[in-house]
Length: 453
Image (cartoon, rainbow, N blue to C red; front, side, top):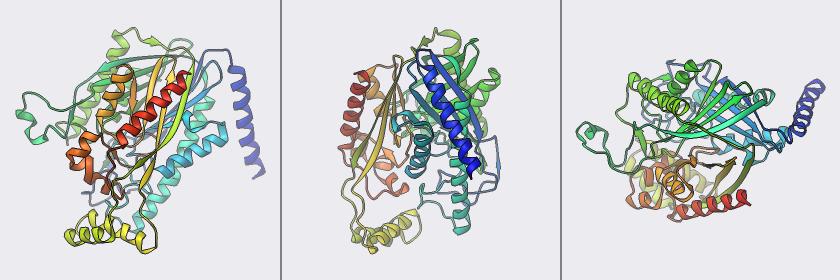
């Protein structure tokens, strides 16, 4: 134990000394990656219709990290991952360890998930929809603990990799995502035009070492990784895009960051060739930015801000409401499991929650603005934030805590899956109150003002 403590404090002291030495210099960047593919068959995340654990893999699942340090010694950590989403518990635990080890705060740590539906279930996520037994739950809990350790080790190695760097940003475009609320998949082949809002931008951040070699490629796009629905581990199209970029740029680490894709699907879908195709299209959009554009070099100044906003739910169900759900469903679907679980909370004398603490971040890398939103954010948020702050702004969803869909007032009024019933998938007690959209924009405005002071 004493030896382990000594090693831990040596790492911390080395980090503090190197941070002090970095003041007055330019960017420093460190990159690392780790395989997070489960080592045994276990349940896959994202679809309630699956009936068995995974049976194989198309390629490895990865978590990857980039550590950036600016000329003042300010440090940020960005983690990408081939998983459905960080839970509140997992995100908080990872961040707390990084707080202690590297003196970072919540504003400086961004944990993004690609939202692939071909990754593993983790503890506490979508607990009502999977028809699993105690044996599978034990596998899930063991995997989640292992995953947390892998992510912490990943960030440790990224810190050890810090070296002089330059950072660039620009935007490309690709168009394989479709607004799924407005364009039924079965009718797409007859459609002469697509309906509903989408964000076709591909955000690209390039990190080079002092010799000009690309060290990391960070890229974002707003589209659900639901091309696949089988029983093989896969990063879906983001996984294939990263593989293509790393093949084209040997020695480079490619990291995908999911955008505001709550209502955006790749269509058509459901085949491996389509997943590969969309991955190639996304990689080609990144390559176009690298080849055609004079990318904007970012000054080595980091500004970060963080806030948790209390988002209210609409009226939570009564015991009678829950019993009616069970009666209508007849214990046939996850609706009944959801209602039984909430009824159990009431039986224990617990009140159902009436709100949720929603985490928000805003970063500024040089002049590049980046919004980090939690949950399954619908595309309206990206469009409206870009209309406010410029279309070169980067808007990411699925960060730090994926607790449910985050619809705008428009979709709450329309109803449907994203606006109403999806909250049962995530185990939330009710759909959101319409006030959430204005609360999120107000918080974003406050954070932007904070980093611009």
